[in-house]
Image (cartoon, rainbow, N blue to C red):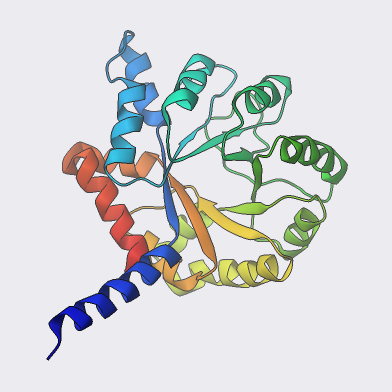
Length: 258
């Protein structure tokens, strides 16, 4: 028996499988929240981002809000110099955000419809009402060579309208899925399965984020084979308090690769 041939075949299959798995982008906003609560530079946001990459994260996500209650503009510029994986900057596309995208040219700009004082991103774009606005913004961002994504819910009409804006990807708002998961996971996922088919038919890539966790991530990824990337922060950082950051990242990666 040729064990080397068997091992080579296994490695080839494993490589193909892991390449197909959705990428994990770690949102480090909560690290900045902890630092800002005390002042100073502990924990060090830049070092944590580098460690996340070292521990297997495929990318780093930040959402530099106007009130700078967690990640700051200064953080974002400094992170851009250090990150070697994909850098994803989220935010409402006002003048401040657009300047950051123009200056830093991240791998991806994820547009959210948040009002300035909102606690967290908990709703997607109305791509029908805001179509003209999004067309203009997305055109500007894509001209910089930056991949675009917009935060959206599972309404098929909104997804179809999103495709007309020229955006590269959509990011499913997965809060409703997470909230319904414990009660009935099959019901919770159904709208996402249907919406993913619509998005794929429209030529859109699919990302997802909000309240995804070790409890519900694997089921979501298995049911949405078109999934390209998840952005996870709050749950992962919370798990890291018990598991350690390296273990938490590896466990989330494992849930995507099963």
